[in-house]
Length: 128
Image (cartoon, rainbow, N blue to C red; front, side, top):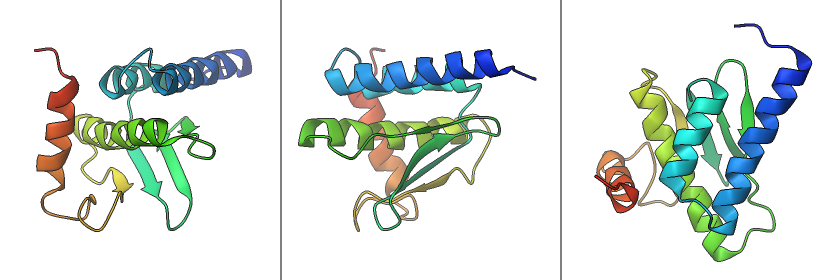
């Protein structure tokens, strides 16, 4: 799929809008994940690593930086949950090596309990 510069800019604006609506509380992390997955054309990876300062959701053609700088505690928590849910979505989209999510020593995509904790977040926002 080839997209021109105007389409790419429109795609980026829609992704940024989804993040703004999450931060403002207009939407929840699960809804934002679904919107980003649609806008980006299928999430394939996530980088959430405070040690390296990487906070990104991406696929082979696009990426969106998560605005953690200046986020208050509530916004930061929602962005963390978004990263976790985007990681699950990337795996659902077929990418089992979907990047990395390191929220704490007890909650990391490298930990064997990650999927259980991540599914609990998804269940919190799921309506069915």
